[in-house]
Length: 173
Image (cartoon, rainbow, N blue to C red; front, side, top):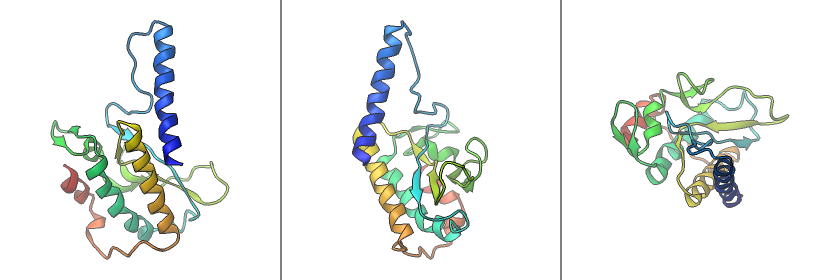
């Protein structure tokens, strides 16, 4: 449930702030925000197996993950000291990547031994959401999009620009 997840993330921050204050820590950084690259990592369980998570699946998910930044982006100064709707977008270099800290992709494609069936679809292209409503909207719409993809209900986008990460920067930068 995206609303419960958003509530728990919010409560986690409140609890951490309370504990640190009780222990006389004056300042802290949110443990859910990568301060230098604005990243927010998500995971969506999918029935696809790793070999099935092909270029077609990635291509069908890209329109959602690019366009959602228009209504979910936090706005701010990203890489290169340039204002962007989505500061995180300025750090994305590829469509897919097996690493989260170098040559960042919109999606992580590494295999993780955290599930015995299916894969985790791991988009790492989101800004860190600022409130519970944004988290719920982000998780709910994205989980629905991944599920529609599993069911084969996302249209073939039939576009060539998916091969270039430049569209991400053009739309959001």
